Image 1 (cartoon, one colour):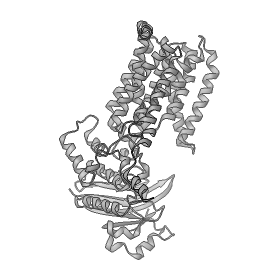
Image 2 (cartoon, each protein chain N blue to C red):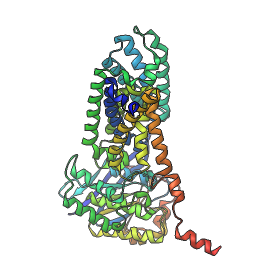
Image 3 (cartoon, one colour):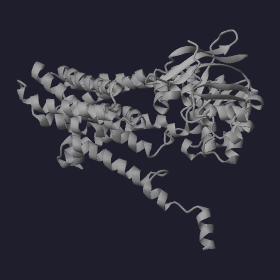
Image 4 (cartoon, chains in turn orange, yellow):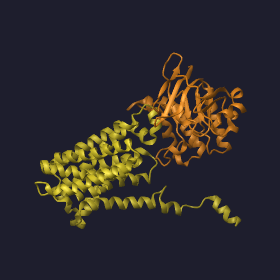
Length: 242
Length: 293
């Protein structure tokens, strides 16, 4: 299936102060997009708006395939936002990804089981399936939530700073999992602050600082000049087209 | 042996034991969600805010169980909604808003209770008396028990999503705010029914202690609700028997029995107990480190 994410003239505000201004972006499937910008640039706000967690001031966000069918968005929260003491195993966490499809009382079928197994395999967590979620390392915890999104059969994956605090091996494992999603034709958008590692992780970048600075292939767009423009203190171009 | 069996011979004890089982199970089952969503202090505030509702009901309709139920229910909902409203519309946070309102409500309750036409002792509301439980009270507790269990089992998937990770749940189309509101409503209903058994002051114990105990033992959330329910029922019944044998009030006896079980789990839970983890054999790394020293 061919899906996309179209953002048209998007403005999102906190307490009436806009954090993202009149953003226009179209992203295609099968790519991993690095969302780059200084602190306060509106990265988290944009992710939350796409996830439907923030009210939109102007514009609209279209997700779905080209036939216009809606497509599932999966939001992976920052690690600090999760209660890791929750009495739940990795397998039960991934099974939660099936709940929206199952509805209130739908029976957990062999097919659902197969989907959960597949998600555990893809994220390389099969051997930890019986563990309580706190007994995982940081990278494994991150992948467990990715597995849950995979089991949800989501098309668009939104991750908020997933690489924060991960060591080299954990980072490589997460990149591998993201590449798997990309190869499967999914769209991954992750906010990221370590500029050095950007080309190793993302094939596309979305540079923002309150408004769109640049967007496109990493090789083309992720240049010194664009990075300097993104991190310049002067945020607004002042050229709003109302 | 005779003293052991004595309580089972009295009809009022048999009724009270059945009531304990029903109320204990309902509280323990619901308690799992309260503990996991960290609503314990909110539930405490709500239990105290029942008092003015009970007082007003006692003044208006006398000691009618249905009237008291409605009075308590309305007062607690008023505090919960009012607190939510204040938190939304000002910089005051949820817990401060609710604490402010419930303490005002408590003051109103204690202030006006002497104007009730019937003779009401404050003790009755504060500590309850399960031996005096009437038919209507019993039926109300059955009804609330069935309602709570049905709602929580029917909606267990969305509720679980909502209490584990609200923002993710919202992206999955779960009505998080609505479900949490429903949970608060169930908490208030359950609190009102345990009033007769253990009163305003101690009702939180029956709701929190069973689930908190299972939380220290198990890594499975279904175990927390079903296990919490069973432990709540068993603890309430044993507590009632202890109160009979030791001739102490039933409310404190029930909470003390559950408290002993909770503290035992805290110390000796196989996986998470404080003593158990200390006694566990040291890991190999420590041993090899010793050799180096």
